[in-house]
Amino acid sequence: MSRFRRTKKQVREILSASDWRDRLDELEACRPGDLVAPLLNLRLDKAEEVRWRSVTAFGLTADRLARASMEKARVLMRTLMWYMNEESGNLGWGIPHFMAEAMVRNDRVAKEFHKILSSYIFCDEKCDGNFLDHPELRRDVYWGLARLAGARPELVAPSERFLIAGLDDEDAHNRAYAAWTLGLIKARAAKPGLEALRDDGNEIRTFRDGEIVDLTVGDLAREALERMG
Image 1 (cartoon, rainbow, N blue to C red):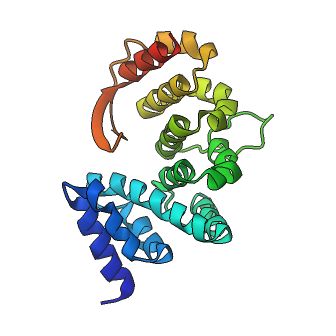
Image 2: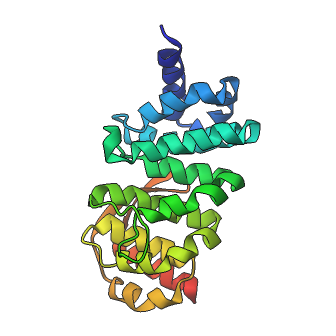
């Protein structure tokens, strides 16, 4: 069995376990560079919980890599950016999740790459953005911004007006994640848009605090308003 297959099997076993959080320390037995490819593969796993938990594991791995060699961490982040490029021929699903989690876990990575993540929702000609036309791929970016805002709101706050625009997105996940993020950065200018979503009953399934949860757009809009007082 190849090293990749052996490592992937080991990582998947950990992420599938009910005590997966407690077992994440087992990944430290592997070199961080050896974990990257298996985790990238597991982001597309058939099991929903494995897909989401691979995000947490990747963030820890990226942090280990950055603490050992910031240059290697930069190469890793640029690789993720390449996955988001149509010319790469790769699938970008889940990649923004990984980008965000790496930035949550490591301050230097966050400072150097947060503007890249935000640029995927920039939607006007005044900004040099990389706006994603595909609404389902934007979901991953909005979730990533919510995750980053929970840890480093000051890095997400400059994207406030694009997040406010996201409240009108046709995709329920995008509206919900935009609302979630705006609450975390306490964007008071978003209050009218959030008020309009109070009774939005469209349901989403997502990952928060290490758990898969079912919520509505309205739930997250009301939560955001409560955060603002």
